[in-house]
Structures are given as C-alpha cells and as structure tokens.
Figure (cartoon, rainbow over the protein chains, first blue to last red):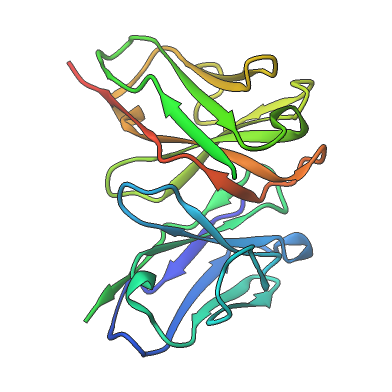
Length: 108
Length: 122
C-alpha cells in the first residue's frame, strides 16, 4: 500500500500569509491521482483539490495544488480566517486508497 | 445539493456489533459509488470500504476485512456499514462519502457527511 507522509504536522501562520503543505508518497502515484481535503471540527470534510492540481467545485483560486510522482504540494496563497483547518492528502491511483496523517494550519 | 447523513453511532462493548447507516439525498444515489472512511481520535483519515453504484462490487481495507461490511439499498437511498467483533481501536468518527464520478470507480470523494461517532469501550 502507498504510505503518504505529510509535513509539517502543524503550520502556524497569520491571515494573509502563504501556506505550503507537503505530501510525500512511498511510491509513485499513478496518473497524479492525488487529492486534498479540508477538515474542520464538527463539519463534513471538503474536497479541495483532485488530480493533483484541479480545484474542486466552489474552491477559491487562492488554493492550488502541484506535484507529480511522489511529491505533491498544496498552496494557499493568502490565508483567510476560514482556511485554518486540517488538510489531508489522499491517493486514489492504487488500491487500497490511503490518506496522509494531515497538516494542521493554525492561527499564529 | 448533496446531503449525506450518517446515523447509528453509539457506545458499544468490545466484541459487540453495530450497523451504521448513511441517508443520501440531493443526487442520483444509484449512479454513484460510495465509501466509508473513519477518523480515530488524534489520527488521520482511514479509508474502510467502497461499494460500486449498483452494488456489484465491494472492496474493504485489509485492517477491517471480515469484520466490517459495506452494503447499499438503492431503493432507500441508503448506505450501510455492518460492524462486527468491535475492538477499542475501532473507536472513531465514521463518515460516508460519495465518489465524484458516476458509474465509474473513481476514488475522489466530493461529498461527505458530518460523521457519526462509534465508541468501543467496556
């Protein structure tokens, strides 16, 4: 199974700053089949990015994804108050589907 | 608008059984594959199981195979997770999620419920 390692574990930033989150895979992810989800307490998780770089419906353009092979990045260009959350990457190129451990983006 | 509402989460003793339900609305349920995913306290998301839109194919994570079983009733727009031989490590919030692509086993989950909490404890 593909193991996804996210870093850093926690990112402490201020609103307006840029956030860069990393997701590294233990082996190549076929077809860049990598997604990112936003998790907030008590809410339904939300799809942010799929196909490594495609924004999901309704996701603002301050969110962008990049990468291929084993290294992927989620960038939030200017953090808004509603962006502080946990972000989890997921690969769907191989079975079983696997998620990373998550990166918490917290207010500094 | 996609709506998924999980139910059935309770406190159960180790070795016990439970069935979770996920009521779907706002989309053509019988056109989309569905997943169960959980998040244990202090841990990341864990994919558990998938069922194809018509129920013709299922897959389960090795960690739960033989104990957790996914099923669906398209006439009721409802997804299920039968949980047997529960262990303390099954304590988690359980989410159902919708596959993004219809009639294709996609793996991207573009709609989620808020989850239901299962606690396995004596």
